[in-house]
Length: 172
Image (cartoon, rainbow, N blue to C red; front, side, top):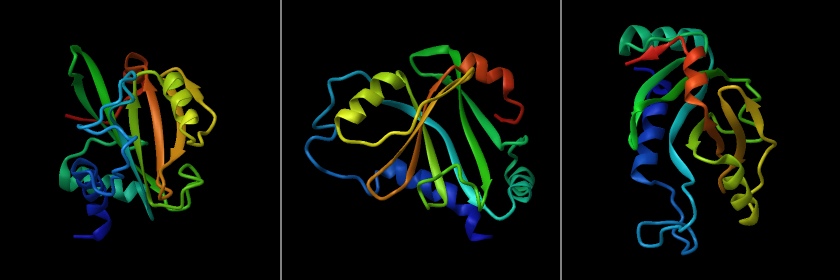
C-alpha cells in the first residue's frame, strides 16, 4: 500500500480524536461551551496534494469503490436536525503544485461546513484570526483561514440544493 493513500484517513482520524488541540480556557470545549451561534457544523471536504490526481482517483475508484468525477467524489448524507435535507462532503485530490491551499505549505486542507459564514468571520476577526476574502458561488460561500500551525482551513456556508445540481461523482 502506498503511504499517500493513508493520509486522508489519518487526518480524519486525528480530527475525530482531537489531536493537536489547544486547551486554552477561552476556546470552546465540552466543559467551556461557546454561547454564540454554531460555528462548524460538519466536515465539508478533505483535500490533499498528490503527484497525479487522475491516477489517485482511479486507484480509489478501483480499490475502495469511490465514484469519482473531475474533482473527486462526494459523500451524500442527511442533515441531523432536518433528515429530509441532503448534505455533502467532498473528497478531492489536488496536484502537488496547487496554489489553492496557500498561504499554507501543507499537503492537505480540511473544509468545514458552517451555518452563517458572515457571523463566524466577524467573530474570528474579533478573536484575531486572519481571514481571506469571501468567495461567493451559487453553491455556497467560502473563506480560508490558517490554524496556529499553518494548516489551511476552508470554511463553507453551503447551499446544498444548488451544490447537488453540479455533483456528478457520488459515493453512497
